Image (tube, rainbow, N blue to C red; front, side, top):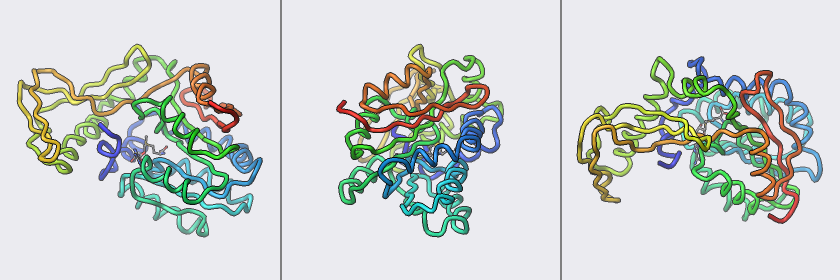
Length: 296
Ligand SMILES: C[S@@+](CC[C@H](N)C(=O)[O-])C[C@H]1O[C@@H](n2cnc3c(N)ncnc32)[C@H](O)[C@@H]1O
């Protein structure tokens, strides 16, 4: 299901990142920026000075705020545009950011996948693209997304990406997507409500449970599991009928994990040079800086 459906309209992700200790990814990513923020800001502003930065999925923006402190300290003049499909998350971030950033930041409610490309075509310049919290991993095909971003960026354009380490022990990895308090389950199953509200149909979320698994290729796959045999209509506009067996799964969200070398290989294949890869002390997540350097 597209991420705008699973995330849009809710702020479950903020609950996950602040109130669920098992979901270690947010705290780890924040620690990296707190530790290396000055270095990252210098890197972002090195070379030809950027005119715009676009963040895909700014969320509640804890990492962004930490990074902005360093960017502001440089007095560089460019605009930082944060895009998110979740209005509650964006509003929460907006309330925190205004007093601190003197107009540097602009917030856009919408789909980053359809917003960023046309904006770059309209206003070319040296550009930074930012995905701080595993958003690339939420893509169905992350290599294709890197390729798309490579084509969007001007030469010398930069991509700052956070991603999650596949080598974290599998039980810890899985528990981070299956917390005992059930926040992840609520978050994922809520996508069925969003689906019904958006497209119509008669899908009943109470007839589904939550299911998560780690695939051999390094994807965490989160699904709705049918609790009964049922026929559901999805959407008056898309008019899809599904006949589901007991335990049959509807895949809602994916979160790819990578080993450090595999990620670098994927980025290099897309035509990026990897300038750094920072991690927290436990190597739970990584933050990499990529520069568009060559023909893909
Ligand atoms: C994993 S969360 C990370 C949030 C934040 N970057 C962080 O690191 O805490 C992904 C964020 O991307 C947003 N998102 C997902 N797909 C999106 C899309 N297509 N366009 C805009 N925002 C999107 C979600 O609403 C959510 O806030």
